Amino acid sequence: MTHLRPYNAPTTDEPLLTYEQAGERLGVSAKVVANMTRRGDLPRVVLSPRKHRIVPADLRAFIAARYRCERAG
Image (tube, rainbow, N blue to C red; front, top):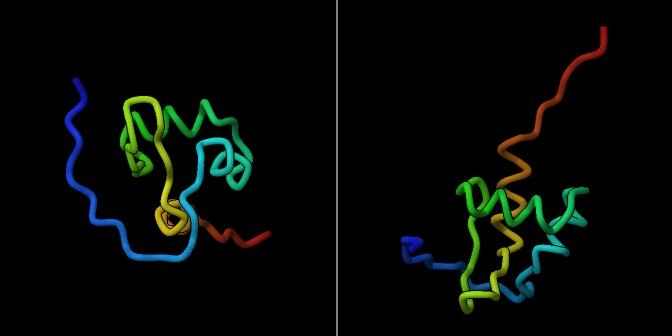
């Protein structure tokens, strides 16, 4: 059984993303996104046992936390 912590999603007019949509933005498959949420790397909203979504702001934060700018040379 998975223990989920309460999530206070920010109010936003942006629609929640499916794993497929989040994967398109990251350049990975929906299965990879599902694995990232299971590991706790990316927060998810559980609407039902088989329906999960990603908050766009959480996806942006995930990307920003991993952003690296390296100098050439």
